[in-house]
Image (cartoon, rainbow, N blue to C red; front, top):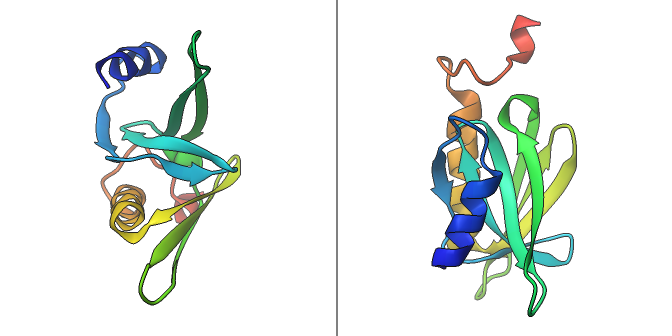
Length: 124
């Protein structure tokens, strides 16, 4: 975990700070990633390789997100999915207890009226 944090720090931009991160890895494009939300981006981060580790990163700027959908499936073993639309479109899925907080946090950030990082469609 400590090594992963050091490698993650290397991909952060100057003055970019981690605001939220998942406790476990969630599924996206048939791979599992830690979800990290910074003041600039949503990052899906993982390390690949057994001996020689290399970062595997999907990045989406918060200001380019224009749509986010959330749904839950199952009765006893609930899972949930988030679909994020921006410069790229991707889906994150996993246990309800991990995915729902990610959705709520992203919603909070992109819907804040005082957020100068996020471009507003009604101001275009």
